[in-house]
Length: 165
Image (cartoon, rainbow, N blue to C red):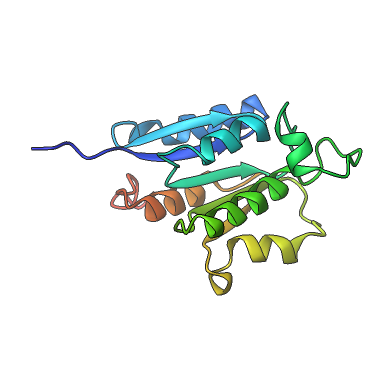
């Protein structure tokens, strides 16, 4: 009998505390879920374009570009080393999916900015009407809701559903 490949989540987060909290939240699923962590857009882009691309992505909106991604994601050289890097990364990846006829993967965005002036762009990157799936989580986010959403997207059993927690 062949053992099923674990689902993979690409976690793109440059805040070590948020990364730690998300990994702790997902620890009960470690037999069925592999979490790959990257803290900048360059490393994340390499992982997204790997042969075994992830099943889902959880991406911070504000992060560093990294060495290689700066020219690709910020060709004008804007002085915005953090602003909307996650959006630019995912926009680039959505174009890559389309160009390579890949299925659209679920994207969750993490942000602390509730007054985000990029709502229309986020909608284009994660909405069903544009052929995508995803959700935005505002910090501080409800970790139970995030966990439940990820398990549903990845087809894994939500550990707390039957307990009513």
